[in-house]
Structures are given as structure tokens and as C-alpha cells.
Length: 259
Image (cartoon, rainbow, N blue to C red):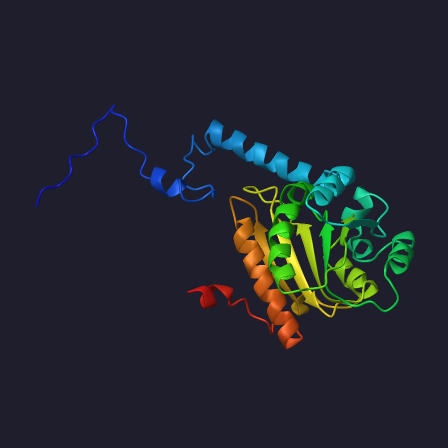
């Protein structure tokens, strides 16, 4: 049996990890210099960390978000949570789960008496406003095409600042929505500061738990693409309406059906 020749001193060797690195953004086989990371890997880590921190503190550009929704053909309504600013929002998650008084009263005036809608969409800044600015409208546009073909009644899009996922429960209840989908910026990671999440809750009302929601996460071009995200959400929304539930009792079997 022939054996490969051993590496020759002084000759550059091919990187055996190059092929695997092309398949994942994970930091693998970074190498070392003494007991530390190589300078390039260390600087790359610091840059990713800075981008994640910036994403958490960056504010939603409300006017730009509204313009994008209008250009895509959506009506929209701005609201705020009870958190007065970004610092309080980060320190008091409970305030991000309920509307401030002005927004609550405004939504009550917006809804016609007793009008029930099949679905309400909340676009929320969450922990990454940049994710919402980049990805929310493309996902909503594709999802609306599927829902309108089935004659879903959809409320105006609610754009919420300083918002947590559970804020959608109060909003959905005020809009008399059978189901609510919250599109929200996820906590930034070191490989993705702009990941969008979508949370579906059937029969929303204050007090719903995370076990009563379905989540579609990592929505972005380099993660779960817009088309795939819209298809999964459409499946979950359709099944939630048919079965009158959401959460742990509702499994995402869209992929199995397509196969």
C-alpha cells in the first residue's frame, strides 16, 4: 500500500478545514499563536461582537419602516410599549410586553366596533431593529400573497417600538384578531446581527405563555430565506386556524408535506 509522503519542512501545506469553512459561518479551526488566537481571527471576533452590540442599541427608523410598508401596499399603525426608552427597555423586559396608555387607546379607536380579523401582524424592533428594517417587509409581502388567495381578513400592520414578543398578545386582543404574528428582531449572535424571528399565537390575549406560540427563526438571506419563511408561516397559520390552537400542540410539518 502506498502512503502519502510526509510534509516537507518549509513547504506551505493546504488548509484541510477550508472546505468545511465554506459550508458554515461558525468559527472553526481558527488556529493559534502561542496560547492565543491569531490576530486576524481575534479582530474578526471583536468586529462581530461590536456589530451585535450595535444592533441591540440601534433604534428602529420608524419613518423608513412606514415608507417601506406603504410602498409594498400595506396600511400601518405605529405604537409603543410601556418602556420609555431603549435603556429602560433593556433593563425592564416586563414593560416591553405591554402597550403604553396612548397606544392602547389609539388602537381601540382604530378598530371598528366588533370587527373580527383572521390575522394581525406586528412588526417589532425587539433586540435587533436592523433585522426588522431589512427583512420584515419582504416576508410580509410573500406571506400576504398566500393569505389573500385564501381570503384571509388581515388587520393593518402594527409597527411597535421597544417591543417584546408578548406585546403581540395585547395588540391581537385589541384588534379582535383570531391569530397574531409578531415579526421581531432576534437577539444578535456573533455570526448574525440581523436575524428575524416570527412568533404565531392563536387567540392572543395578555397572559399567553411561550408554550402557546410557534416560532420560525433565523429569517435572513443567509439563514432561512424569505420564500421558505413565508411558506412555513402560511402552513402554521392555516393549521392554527383549522385546529384552533398554536404552540407545542401544533407541529411544523410543512417540510414533510412538501416531501
